[in-house]
Length: 148
Image 1 (tube, helix red, strand yellow):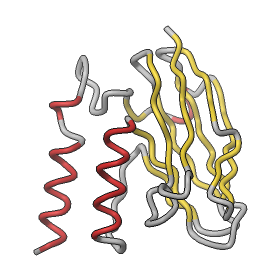
Image 2 (spheres, rainbow, N blue to C red; image 1 turned 45 degrees about the vertical axis):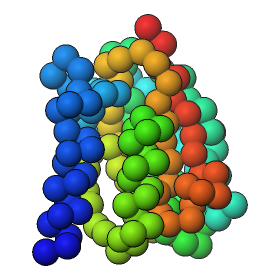
Image 3 (tube, rainbow, N blue to C red; image 1 turned 135 degrees about the vertical axis):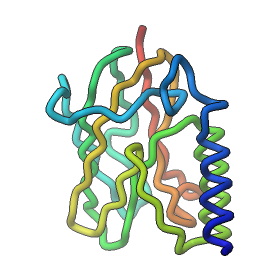
Image 4 (cartoon, rainbow, N blue to C red; image 1 turned 180 degrees about the horizontal axis):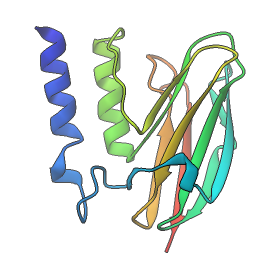
């Protein structure tokens, strides 16, 4: 029953109140990876860093983000606004074994890679982070700059 409450809270946090122009998220929407005009490989390390730590894209561009776990522990890449990522990180600390599968998230086992295909529909600064407890707090955060 607790898990259902957690999912309900996540739905509220990422729900339509934050959406713009019909997009499910304030920073865009899931996209078909075959329509990507750009692919960016992002390495994740046990030093709790992403490389590159900043990505610049154009508004409307469909991007394939390939997250590569170069470490020995599980990492993830979650797209969002800083406020959403902080709230989600708090939830993950309270429920560390919570499982979820959203198009703006890639959970990546050591030595593996994951993929997010995303269309950034709004200009601004957005972020990606690893929300596994302790990783976000250690600085495992990157920035996405969406140019008009």
